Image (cartoon, rainbow over the protein chains, first blue to last red):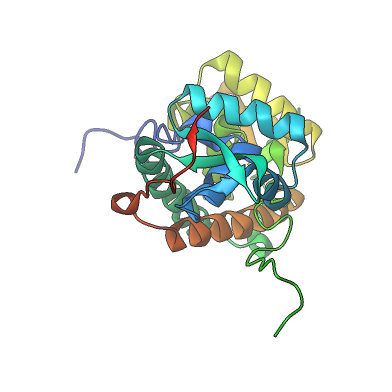
Length: 130
Length: 130
């Protein structure tokens, strides 16, 4: 028998999810990075905007953050004789995204190991609402 | 043959992930809610703090946001004759978390359908760095 009376099933930091890089985790940027990860040849600014349902200003702001982190490369050029902006994930961005997704898979696994909604339990006697 | 020359593989909003409730998605709160979802009987404040590697102040702040959203119930009581705080996901919080996780699974599926890191592609001729 263990001398330690308190049984800890979970270790400290078990649900800290340190690998969830905040640069990628922010909701709009998660959409942007996933779009780009599934289009390795890059996406035009306007197509990316549509795919992620973002405004010009919002997309620009998030792309700047991703560019500063070294995750996204912005290219200027012409398509059909019109000036265009092409957005592409960098190799580093792809790598960090893969690492991020691995943690996300852990979150999903943890979540699905939990009790289903129907098993919501009443707390024991002696507790009162704060 | 379609008259529409532009082939759109992805529909607008395909990567908007509207179902990623921002109350749950924030990194620290995602850890808190996943901890609580896997402990339907509730968790003591100090145990939750350890599991999520949060400070007292941070945990209190995030619990307040979750409580205001109706996702978490806070209980006061005694354990081993000492005053304690118990945190528990509400039935509504559990339901919203399950909906959130379903979207998270879509993100993971989308991400894994993308090209692996080794397939980073050079952009075509004619594009220059912005």
